[in-house]
Length: 418
Figure 1: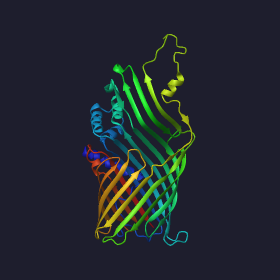
Figure 2: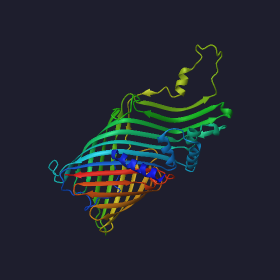
Figure 3: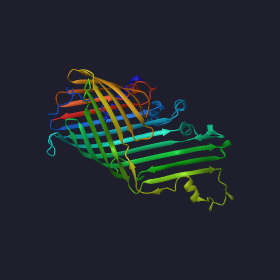
Figure 4: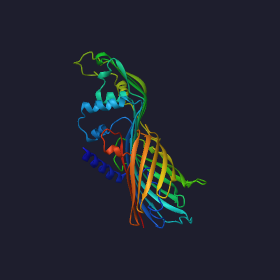
């Protein structure tokens, strides 16, 4: 079993080659990092991060594998969900390839040009425990009572960016403007939803107040252009003055922008009560016009939707960090971040790093919040020769070693200077 989990960790690590690193777990280091003397730098960063505050990893793994999910696993998952008042889950999968040029851009000594391309897939979910129960066990256990299916929200966005910007060499601050290609969007927001099941299931009464938005349903594969937008990203950092230890303050905003989805986007809004007490047919042998009220049925089952262009915000992220140089080898960092995704709450992280010689840096982190709860991470930075810097890590190491954990992730970074 441990071997399978180690193999899963390696799989996630390889997957992260196609995915974008979060706010650096490892701070910059003047000895281990590549020097500023290189005129060009090419950087590949990746990040895969899944987290949940109630669902154990065994259920999403079973869903990924497909096939039948036995009742014992479903019941164990339901028991875990029932223990939480607010169930949350989500993931971030992204990759970024960027180039940074030499100084003296546009005649400014400390300006360096940036070109960046990325692919991003982000999902956030918050759900009621009764919704999980009805989804995996049906509504039989709710006979004679109401299942509260909301509030529930789900949003998944896939998009690509291509951008140009400027980095300021002395402070490592930067600003970048991106053109955004919207690949796909699914956005469900049920402010309230309930299902009453009568005795023997003879009566079903559903109440719902919510919205559903889906990008062009003709296709959502990679390369599909279902929307167009723009975004701005930027970071600012500075060294605090009049402090006993060297201390740096940094803020960053990523993907603050929008996508306008094309006119084939599906939009459905409901604020209604649906009552089902059977279908009555006067003459079962008379098949002509046996189904009446077709317009009402279409509206009941959500078929009376409209297609129109619509604009939505991207799942942007805002974060800040404060880093202190404790001594010649040790540093400490506190980070706070928030994502514009359902189910994501402010996440706070504390990390400590130690330089190992002149070529390596090792760090550990503890974080709480986001889509889940308490996590323990591990990361390392290794310089190979004078031209290559490699970073690997995971925000939650126990997630790959213990099946009873919640969440798993991997991070990767590669920088080549020439």
